[in-house]
Length: 415
Image 1 (cartoon, rainbow, N blue to C red):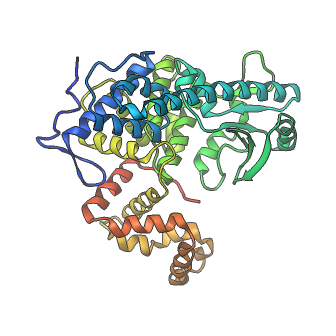
Image 2: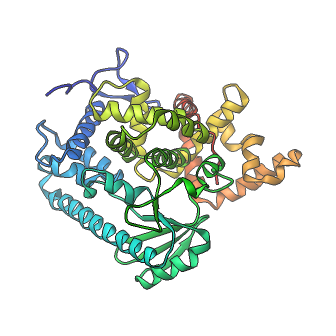
């Protein structure tokens, strides 16, 4: 099999080191290589058993990575024969469930679009729904929610339509409402793509709705052109990466989109858009890793670090990963190495201003802010998880992660 050992090779004369600071053994590198090859085969429509022998421990690792990154239909059909007999029926059920959910989600999105059009509600379906239509087969691209954005002035009309279609209003976030329909449908109804304060550069870039085009055969359904959709995709991934980490499905999305739309991605306009949104370094690193990994080319040590981190993060990320962006920013702002544990417990004035804006005019109250943050953290489960991660980290581990985040050059802000 061509290039079967490329990613298995030891890097720089020894085992690669991950962003956790631990050495990656040959078994893990082989699993990463097989995972990439399975995805590439699955995207090309192959469902027959993977030709290379996969051991039981390898199959367990692959099944877990597949589950955490929501890629069951792409990978599981190829490896079920290598899995333990007792678990095969559960794996088949996972694939069937994903395929049925995809079918119902797409039918539901189409129905919502038809009713919005009928009620003259200007609307735009977002990443998941649109990427399903770009993948070779929509069943290969799993998604959790149906995300759609409408004009803020038409939110109430859109809510009435969703209620009429059998959805029940659930929780609300900063710029979207959730609507639910049993057994698994979730619609996120947005009135803004980005928070005007937290995602200022992205908000300014995308706020002009005139840059969106009408969908074919629709008057009120809209979409981005290929360049802006790609920038939006990258911005979406960057926000996840910054706050909690993001999984390998983001890599696969980039690979599929760039392969399908390569003739339509105007290089100069794309460069200017990424610069305007502060995403140049992040996009380049994600795209280069996606193509190298899925085309079975050798990876650099940095790419192995990033790949392992993304596999571990899973599609939704992990709340405790939020510490890395904060520590990277403290390091950049100070211009020197930092004590990671101290910086987490006592964030810099710059970081604290994001949490408590009143410190802008009262910097002398920074110690009081630290106390308030500590008490708030005691009641916050995610903050407790981040604190545990800091408690257990060693210096080498911390700096591997800080360097990884610094290299992405993401100057975003937290909630």
